Image (cartoon, rainbow, N blue to C red; front, side, top):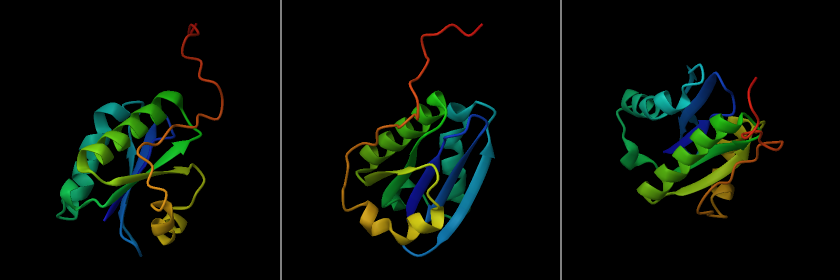
Length: 132
């Protein structure tokens, strides 16, 4: 089973479980800029709804962008940490890649076997500018 994480939006994120042939379960979580509070809980819930656990994850797919700077950092950092901790492969995909297409090309995605996924923000982050 594979885990899919998409945190490109500020107010919601998508997670899914899939195998080499089908999307098993997909869930959109309304997070209202609280991805860091809800992401891991939601992953645990989607796994338990299928009577599964992190031990059954064979690889992680994470959307690397473009998207919200903070939202991407939360999703990608979580995915990288889970992949490292579980000892599984991780792959990054673009925001507009269809989940069904990702499922059908899963083996190709993991041929590269990157150790981490780097975010692609789509523009320079403005993290030092004052928000007036």
